[in-house]
Amino acid sequence: MRVLAALSGGVDSAVAAARAVDAGHDVVGVHMALSRTRDQFRTGSRGCCSIEDAGDARRAADVLGIPYYVWDLSERFEDTVVADFLSEYEAGRTPNPCVRCNEHIKFAALLDKAVALGFDAVCTGHYARVEVGDDGTRELHRARDAAKDQSYVLAVMGPERLARSLFPLGDVASKDETRAEAAARGLSVSAKPDSYDICFVADGDTQGFLRDRLGSREGEIVDTSGEVVGRHDGAYAYTVGQRKGLALGRPAPDGRPRYVLSVEPVRNRVVVGSVEELAVGTVEADRAVWFDVLGPAPFACEVQVRAHGAPVPAVATATPEGTVRVDVDASAGLRGVAPGQSLVVYDGTRVLGQATVTETRRPGSAPGGVVASSSAPVPEAETAASSRVAATAPDASLGTAAAGVHR
Image 1: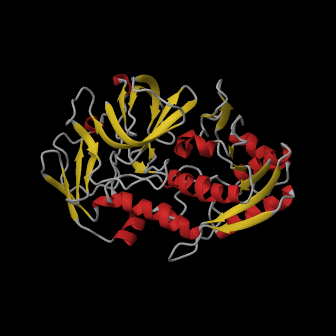
Image 2: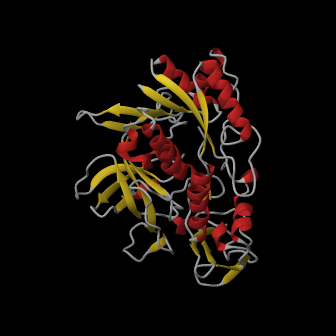
Image 3: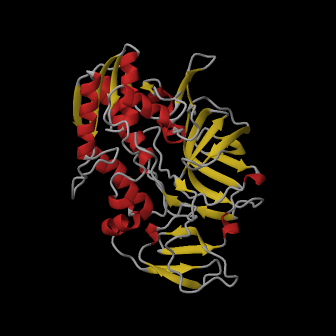
């Protein structure tokens, strides 16, 4: 096959390209130039998306003996990934720019251009597996190394894109194995650190980036009774489940920590409460993308709402309109799910599909017992697989936006 290998400048994509060469494919390397935003170039060796990373990608291609090109997708990146990041936060939702990038850059702009140029597939360094089902269709599965699995951020691509995608690292036992292989092949990126941050946010300061782009908008932080307990400089900078960074002038009566329960962009208000009030029993989501045809009957599954979160048992019900309701097992202890996050549905290791969270309800509550819901309409999808999603880090902030590792 003619294969276009996406070379980010990191170790994963370099080894993936090398394996594609070993498999006998006619491989061409390409680096996507995403470094240019409207106000600056990104510099520094980060593992993804900087000028120095383009140099690392070129050196990897030289070692592998494959042609190498740079494609400037910076304008598309700014107009989709960055613009979506800003508009979603402004609307009170929590986006994941890495999923957005997979949806509109890696497996859209890049893949479409590759097909137009006569390539059969695109190869990336993502950790996920592709298997052929009993009916001959290609299925997306979790990677062998659960710690590196990236099927969550790939679920948005859908079956048509999957059919033209190669993930040579899906069966790797560990990242150490990838690095050892890179060193053995003479690839200079063998010890290069992973990039965990959001590539277009300098120094990982998401709130600062949002304030620079959206401006300062002072407003109230209130508890569930409506009492003002603090002030903020912009409701858009907060996400459901967040604990860190809350400027609360009044402690809770019980002295316990408060968490963000909801963000109200129209009122420019942030509502806080106890960790127990973040409990989720039901998740409503829309704009579903499925890898298989599902009937209307409820089905048992596992769902994952964070890139590195644990899957939880659930019962899902899909509709022909592209919505899905998920009732989570009461013992799962699911908390802090924000509108805008991606809900990925699994059957064992197999990805069944994904949808975008619009609303959550507490365990045992009827419709109306809302923990969090979208406060603004979600834009129409630009493609059938379009999604506005988020990954949240399970530290002191249950809902802090986090980027996945760039490949």
